[in-house]
Length: 389
Image (cartoon, rainbow, N blue to C red; front, side, top):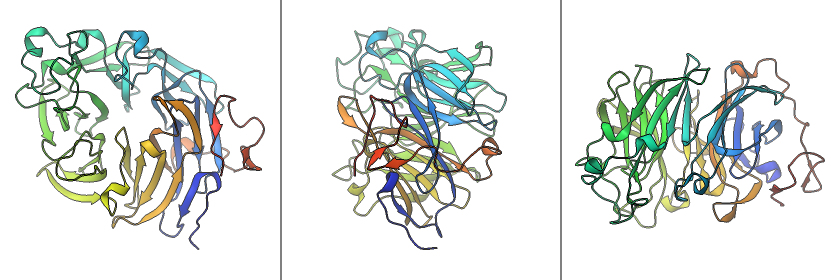
C-alpha cells in the first residue's frame, strides 16, 4: 500500500504497510468529548461528557468507556494551579453514552488503573496525605519556602470497588525516604513526590511515576514499601510508566530540567528492571524536535511499534522499533485551557482491531464528517473550535 500524506482530519502521515492497525481513543483537554478514531482519522464514536477530563478515559474490555472527570478546579478545592491534574468523578458509559456507573472521588489526580477484578486504583491528593511537619522538615530539594501555605502535600494511592468502598490505600510520605527521594531544585515544595501515573503489575505490585523526584517507583502491594527505583540522574520529570509483555518497563521521559542537553528534549525508553539498563530508546533527530514539558505517554503495540503522545502539541505518532515514524495525527480540537489556546491531549490509547471491547460495534466511518473545512452538523460542542486547514 502507498504512503499517505494528508492534513485531512488530523492525519498528517500514514504508512499502512508499516503501521500497526487499530483504533485510537483520546480526550482533548479542556473539552467535554472523548473520540475514537481509525488510522485514517475517521471519527467512529463520540462520548459527550458532563466534565472536562481529569485527565483521560479508557475503553474497557466490555466496550464501555471509563472516564475521570474534573468536578472542581484546584482553586475551588483550596489548592494551587500546579495541582492541575485533578479529577473528582469516575464515570462509566456504554457505547451509546448512557451512564452505567459513577463514583465520586474528591482529590483524584492524574491517572487511574482499571484492575482485572473490577476495582479502580487511582492517585489522590486528599488532605489525609499531607506530609507531617516532622517529616516535611527532612524533605530535601525544591525551592525554599514554596510549600502550599506551609505544607507539603503528599500523594496517596486509593483502591475502590464497584460500590465505591475503599479496599486499600497508600500514603507516599510513610514510605518515601527524604535522603533519597529529593525534589528537583527547580520545582516547588508544595508536593512530594507528585505522582502522575500508576500501573498494576503482573506480579501483584504497583509501578508509579513520581515526577518531582524524576523516579519510577515499584511498590509492594502487601506492605506498601518501596522495593524498586529507577531514574535518579537518568530521568527528567517523566510520565506514563507501564509494564510490557516481556517484563520490561516503558517510560515517557519528558526531559524537563535535563542537565546534559540544551534545549530540552523528550524520549520514550524501555528499561530492563532486572538490571536497570536501557534496552530501547526513541528520540528525534535533532532531539529538540520532539519535546513536551507537560504530560505525554507511550504504549507498546502488538507488532513492536510504539504509540507516543506529545501532549503540548496535541500530537500522537507511531514509530517502528528502529524509530521510523509510520503514522502521525494532530488533534484538530483547540480550547482555551492552561492559560492558552491549545490542542493538548494528556494521553492517547491504542486498541487492536480484535480488542474485545470493540467486537460487534459499528466502526464504519461517516457518523462524523469533515465538510467545507468545518465540522458537519452536530459534530462538536459550540464552545469547542475545530482546527481550520
